Amino acid sequence: MPRPEPKTKIENVVASVVLNQRLDLDEIAATMPNVEFDPEQFPGLVYRLKKPKTATLIFNSGKMVCTGAKSEKEAKRAVHKIVKNIKEAGIEITGKPEIIVQNIVASASLGAELNLELAAMKLENTLYEPEQFPGLIYRMRDPKVVILLFGSGKLVITGAKFEPQIDEAALKVMDRLLELGVMRIPEGEDWGQVEVDEDEDW
Image 1 (cartoon, rainbow, N blue to C red):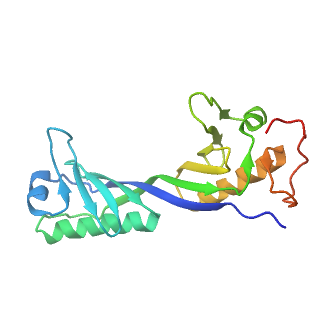
Image 2: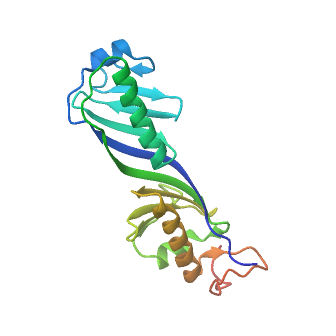
């Protein structure tokens, strides 16, 4: 059976927004539904949308941080919807929002168990302290992301700036792990892996 592709799923997109104007958060809080604003606790206003399901922090400097989107497109849609809603409430916004994706977090599955101790010895740029955290931390250089690897073959990919980097990183790390012989391939299947030393402790 040929090697399956890693399955990836975007869990969160964090985008920063600049409006290039100051905002009166008290006015927004007084006129908008679905907002939380307690300046004594936190200087930003929280604006929650149900569709797309996101939470956006809005600061009086005109800067925003949108979290919870499941794609770049969804994050941009959420920001434009919030700006439109604020304008419709009679609050003037003159410029267009400048939206930059800061971080994409995704989960992935490789479909095979991993020998993390062996991976920590053979794979470069890793940190593995199982007493502190059950996963191995791998810093990939290209694309520049951080991958948390777990013995089950599950991954968390963080630090991506563009969606295609998620699949690229998952494929690259799978190729590297196969090359190093640290994946336990299901019996009877050939994924093009190297032979694993039977004496290795799994």
